[in-house]
Image (cartoon, rainbow, N blue to C red; front, side):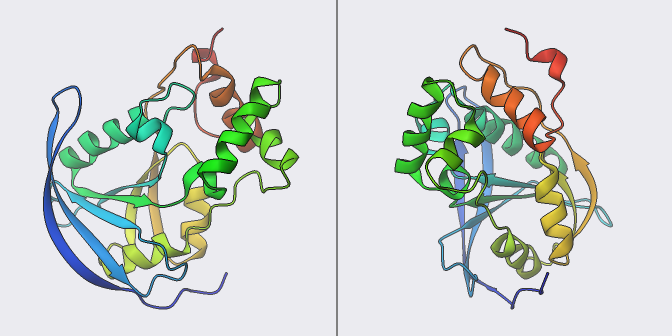
Length: 209
């Protein structure tokens, strides 16, 4: 895969975070010039990386329904909350990527939900709409990490494709660290499809029901 051009940090600003359960975190938020897709992605620096240590990094795709409204149809909101705490403890970055619905957009994601209600899984619903199963490209994420001098990372993710894409783009993924299993009655089929269709590192034995 061709290496992306250089991006630069555009601005940095401190934002104190308070989650609905009362958890507090302090983030330094960076914006960027020169990202290949032109989207307004953010990097949140959390905690402090120990001297000689490896930053813990989460690539979190925007999910309005899960992150903001607390939808139980996915595990995005709980993963975001978990990631902020774990990265704050270890030191590293949360990259908040504007890739709603695995890159298909909000309206298309909601259309796919309607097809899932008719029995399709999350991947087949996308293809039934003439869209990719997963349309995300992590070139901009690799550019952001390079601009932050974070070219060797531990990746907080259950998704092997994220690690593979970053490696192809010149980011050294030393370890892939799984997130917890955030199970609800409404997301069992969604999580099972992730395991069976794209090899996510989630224990199937936890996905009962």
